[in-house]
Length: 343
Image 1 (cartoon, rainbow, N blue to C red):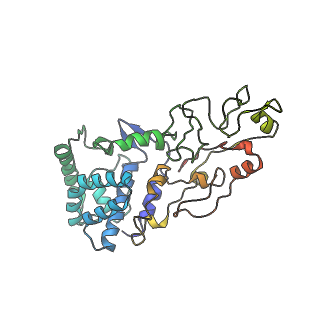
Image 2: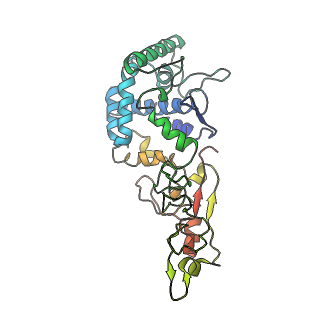
Image 3: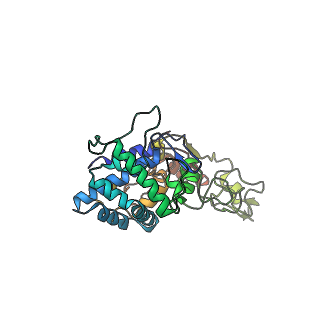
């Protein structure tokens, strides 16, 4: 299975963005879409770890989950606890990652579609065996985990605790709006989850009329900073507000990028997909990267505003936004990156 995980991840991140959640289930792509691809990534990587470290599949699962920060490690361990017995049995029967994810029901063939798979078909693990394991999975989920299944297909969103992922997905990865945005002005004080990595940082998340890039208030920001560029107050000597004094007639402007993974600055470090390089240290920034859809817009060509502080994405940043900000300080925080992987 080695060397195929990167290809799987590309499948996850570049699935067309016209996705939605219907009845609390992911529908992105075909044949199980995002859930299927994510399952295949996870099983493939754990299988490689087991091979490299001479471990059983469950030992490798434990090792992998312990490498992850708690935000991801806890759901990982829960997934392993729920599906571990099923996975062990399928591995013993010679199943590969495609077979396992079909066997537990996260991958399936939709009517009128070819079966999507990454690995050669396992002769010993035929359709009859897959159907048997799908039945066993549904029975296991109902009996041992109190999952209410209304039909043969199920979703991660049906499983208690794991269904919290669906809320995050719907708000951020599907609608592409900030998760932390109290005043709903589409600007956030937080960096990830479509926050200030993507749009100028909100300097007052309690007021919807205060956000980066807006036209200053009639009083020209005498009492507060309505456009979050850090310039406000009144100069008694000139009788003007600082916004008016420093920014009027300076040609201030912002920058917006609409595009795909290039505009969003997609980057998936090699260390995350090579079991021989995979360490707890290398996975330290994985939650942040996943919350930004494996994009690094804060380092991008158009809206990048900082040099990298992440070991997995090294290098200085030079961008259009940084240059217009250097030329005119009034442009501070006036950037928006609305790029989406796979657009």
